[in-house]
Image (tube, rainbow, N blue to C red):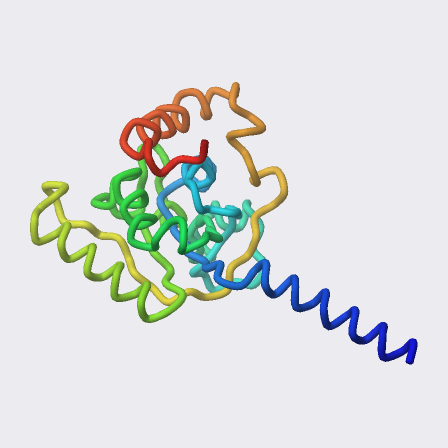
Length: 199
């Protein structure tokens, strides 16, 4: 009887964990330095977590130093976990495209290399179709004046970046890179997407 009770408790607790995570979805974006991307998406209402990492390469468990060489093929990305009842995937796409230059190949500002490429890693067919549709509309309307070169690829192995890369802007806001590069992006986000931000 005692054993059955323990099993029942385990099953109930597992169910509650499932209920907590049920309904949450993932989105993965590469848009230059992941310190910048993370700082932006963390502020969106409906986003429950953002992890910086590496995706799209051909080497298992790459280090930051490995990725920086450009030889592993990985992009610096963020893995966004979000609640679709509070923020939709197409809203995340809007923030993605309006928060970096998707017309420059393998470059964002002074950050140059394939690891800084503009890329969307889709997790299902719906994400793929929404991303492709949005990209086509941007190009058809010449929204940026130049073609959008953002790659749209199937999600592959995601490797979480080293601990010091996580929550970087919040922990290092006084660093020159944070003040000169990330802060203006955050301020732009707060101006354009004010209604989508956490209180």
